[in-house]
Image: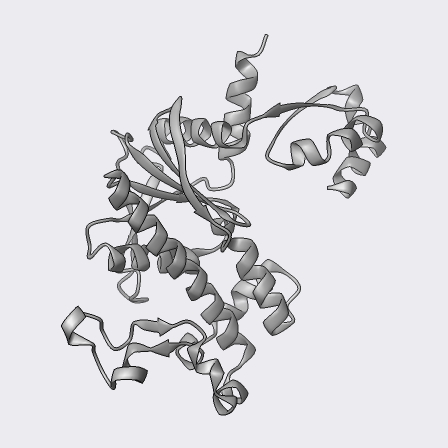
Length: 279
């Protein structure tokens, strides 16, 4: 952000426009720097208001003649997995799972009526931070690339590692994760894993947790439409497929994880819509 503010000063942004729309914590954290360094005033808008308005507007416009929303069919099968459109013509009520550094989960009843149900501090920042510690990676893209080549079963303790197979009484398959990173209690297994395995296990730990919480929120709020958004998903097809599988698994097929084609633009579009209302 300091580099962007300095660029705004160097390129004399204030000669083009003196007011910038901004949402989120940075609108407050960097407001004085924008004013004193960049000679720019910030029009501070609520992050979640802009997010919801942006999503609903973009969905209403559509995408190349089809729905903006989509879901993954057979997300766990690389050969059979396919992306299919989902018609969100009746969006309310909607559970919106916003995955950034952390996670906020919103129950949306109309464009002006929503509440924050809950959240979790285990989000995209957790994935990247742990990957930096465990693998030495330096970029989010590098962490994802590592995760795409890893085998999490070398890191996680599975149901079959405890029971020797399925736990049939409670319908738990042997391949289900019983303990994330549970195998790392063994020195021998720690020495056998790769950085790629650790990155993959970290990604699965985070997405399984988010999927489980989202499913419980949907059940508690009696909502059957769950849309996942946030910068964590912008270039992250692996996580989207994992979330799709996790939600399907935890809900026993009753819920689909929905995503949007134009991930990453919702806040900006919502801010523009809000700006157009300001005299």
